[in-house]
Every structure is written in C-alpha cells, then in structure tokens.
Length: 225
Image (cartoon, rainbow, N blue to C red; front, side, top):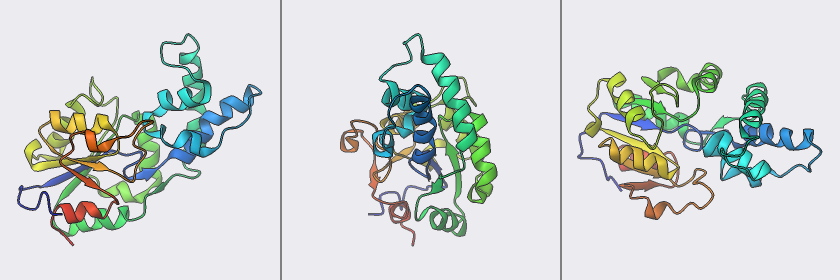
C-alpha cells in the first residue's frame, strides 16, 4: 500500500470539493433554489452529488440540462453563485478522517496545500470558516493562474508556493481532471475513490498512480501511520 514511501515526497496537494470537503449539499441547494424559483419541482441531493465537483457547470447541467454554450447559462450561473454564497457554510463539512490526515502530515514534517477550480471568492469564504485550512501552506483557486485544471499551471503554482519541486509532491483528487493535471505537472497522483468522481466516474481508467478509499488511506500510501 505504501506506493510513495520511497519517493522522497515532501508535500501533499489536495483538490477541495469531493476530496477534503463534502460541499455537495450546499452546491445542490444553491442550484435547486433556481429550479424552485422557476416553479420546477425540487430534485433530491443525490441527483446533484456526482456532479458537485464540476461547480456551476455541473450543477446547472443537473438542474436544467444546459451547457455553458446555452444562451441562458451566464445569467443562471451568476444567480447560482449568489445563492451559493448565501448557503456556502450551511452543510459543508470535512470528510471523516481529513482532520486526522492533515494533522499526521504536520507531525511528519510534510507540507500540504489545496488546488481547486473553485473561484477565490468561494475558496476564501470556506477557508475562513474552517479552521482546518489554517495550516495549508498553499491555496490555489481556479482563478489564481491563467489556466485551471486539467492544465498543470495551478499545481505548479502550489508547488512553487510551498518551495517544493513538483516531483516531490503528490496530488489527491476525485475527478479525472485532477489526475490529468497532476500527471502533466510531474507529480504522483492519487484518485480519491470516496469523492464525487463525476457523472461517469471510472477512476480505474484515469491513470492515477494509486487510489485511496478514504482520506486516511493517503497516509498508508505515504508509508505513514
């Protein structure tokens, strides 16, 4: 299980939604409010959960069956963002084992950080609310660099903020874009099997170096207790 035990890993980077935190209840609620406001029936959270990692694009696809190319998408996205800002802290929480994982990394002198496609306006609100993120050495949002995942630029930015070469980092994420970005950045990659995984999640085919069925399995992959 210790896939990276002898790889000289000095830092662990994580995706945010679906990897460190379960934000699906609040994201789904923000999208569902759009439906109800328009006289459409409410959808259950399970309808939204698998697409929660895709942000507004995923939530609006579930709520209205539209893509970013639809003429109504920009206005709906802004309304969704407004709704989400209002409820962003209502039911979002860290996955079981995440606080223990972060504490163990610190005990073992490993740095850690967050690389998410979530915009800074939302990432900062979550970071302010959840004390867990106070020890993160890097927080890179979807608008921090000119490119977002699956481009490697955000991961390379996080490694630079930590002062760690990419080959001494691993990236943990629950979406194929995370693995593509991590590989392109020259990092070891871990698929978070407990996360959202997208609408047609098939992580076994993503090309990740390892898989974690729970947050604490990341420690085993690193050869740590």
